[in-house]
Image (tube, rainbow, N blue to C red; front, side):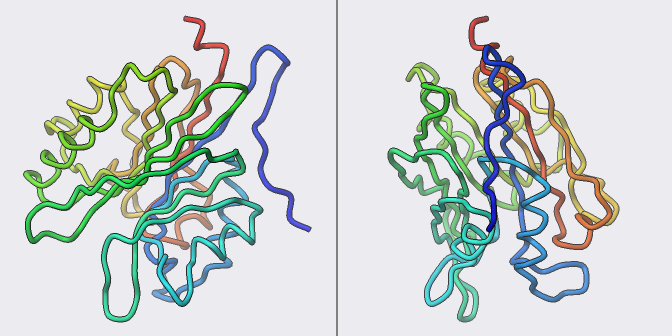
Amino acid sequence: MITPPEPESESESEPVLRVATWNIHDARGRNGERDLDRVAEMLGHLRAPIVGLQEVRCGSPACDAAYLARQRGYHWHAIETWRHDDAQYGNALLTTLPVESTQVHDLSVGRREPRAALEAHLRWQGQRLRVVVTHLGLRAGERRTQVERLLARLPPDDGSITILLGDINEWWLWGRPLRWLHRRFGASPSLRTYPARWPLFALDRVWVSPPWMVSAVSSLQAPAARTVSDHLPVVATLRLREVAR
């Protein structure tokens, strides 16, 4: 029987929660073959009760998000953003926490590939969590529009802990989309995650508001992780006591 990941707790006064983001690249590894079981195995190594996934097959008749959730003991929510041949792709949230509601934010720009953000409201240790999973576009102007639109939908004063998980696709550390996101959420460490075999670019990010809840952020550097997708997963550790600051 699979044991789902649970929020950690170093002491009764300091609950700990791990969150992760990962572009699984349609579960295609370095050898070009699809292998969902390999992805499920890596999810176990993340030990995160909240995981945001990008480039997930999520339409009928088969949903990869549902399969991965069953394998690792998660609940799942997914949104379709685009279709290619006979497959439908999008973003997904896997979580062991209670989900109160979800909504979708359309981030599509013109005739570019459709994009969206999945927003979910959860509960952890009596706190409200607003978790957003997204995958932004490839062009700079497209990303600027998408970040402006996304920030307009995430007011900072709603009383929730906000967690933004995604493949931001921002290659330039000085780009305006990153500066706007840092201004809203606080700085996010630039961890090289792409390409997975020899990571050069920090495309995958975790932001948390308030930012001082984050005690550590790392990418999964295990040799096996470099073969599962063309992106490495990013994991952040949150500590509830920091909210008091």
